[in-house]
Amino acid sequence: MGSIGRYVFRTTMGAFLITVVSLTLVMWFTQAMREFDLITSERQTVLVFVGITGLIVPLLVMMIAPIALVLAVSHVLNKLSTDSEIIVMNAAGVSPWRLVTPFIAAAIVVSLLVAALAAYISPLSLRELRDWATQVRADILTNIVQPGRFTTVGGNLTFHIADRRPNGLLVGIFLDDRRDPKEHSTYLAEQGEIVKNDNGSFLVLEGGSIQRLESGQRDPRIVTFDRYAFDLSKFSSGPQSVNYNTHEKYLSELLWPAPNDTAYLTQAGQYRSELSDRLASPLYPLAFVIVAFALLGPPQTTRQSRTLALFGVVGAVALLRLVGFLSVIFGVHAPIFLAAQYVALVAAMLAGLWQISSGKTLEPAPIVSKIATAIGERIARAYAS
Image 1: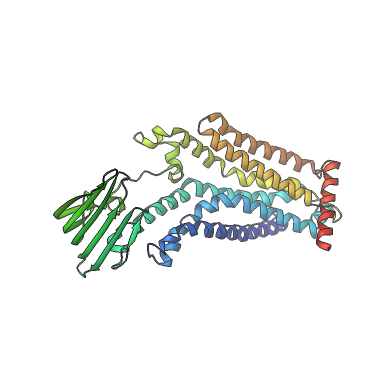
Image 2: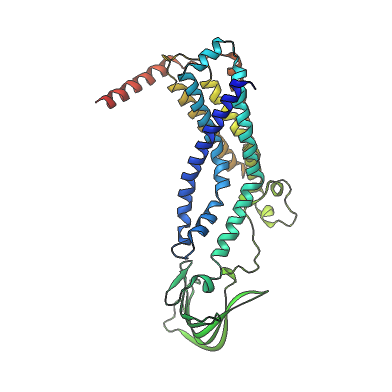
């Protein structure tokens, strides 16, 4: 790769980094707002909030990187064309293959990044996200419930304590349990404490009563107790068996599922579809770059509009991504559909390489040019008025 290639490669990667960071921040912000209850209702710090929601970034980068790359390539090619650099290089005898080489090199770098994210980094971060979020939401009474406040968990379990002693003893406990639609239970106790053992976590209540009202009954049943253990294992960070979904599985686990993996036995189609999507993800940067260069790479004068070529790139990229999504969705029940995205990607790359080798500008049909010109003139008049 000569000086021209290094210049194009540096410019492309710089534009890619700016684009992928910007898009990732926007997408992260929209996703992070869904977990804002960590600060509001569950009273966690901003650092915990950023740390937990930041674990989704690898997945976002894996999805955004191919789009960010094609935007960067389109920007660089448009800049080279606007400055007439492509025309000068073409006149100097620089072949299309020499010019496309740095773009292919950038695509390979992004493909390796996407492959690493898809195989290990993204599943690892999603696992950490689930485990950390579960831990933050765990130990409700010791970490979340504040004395003198009613705290609702899951929308149907409400806690209230009058005071918390320095030794961890809880005083004046009220617990309203509406998780069972057939029974409404209210617990009152003078005091209690959290007990953890191998069986889980329990709130041991002392000196209180349980009021249970079954659906369809007018009068509740009241039971008094000296000691009563309320199970908090569902909300505790104690030993729990975690069943990770297909997005949280490492690539090796999708290729060679464990014989005792019950999720694979019941959802083999999901595993197969996720595996196909992971293996195809590194091909998208290469396909997008080849298509973008095939449409925007040929030399054009400043009098020739590149608008249609840009629309062509957007349309081709959107079509390839749509085929990929539909292939994964329908491939869950019909494995033959999983081949569709590979066929589309290979066909796009072969067609793009053939167009690059021809060295000709892909001219649209006359009717398309007329429509585009009419739309452009109408927009220009609208802005002028």
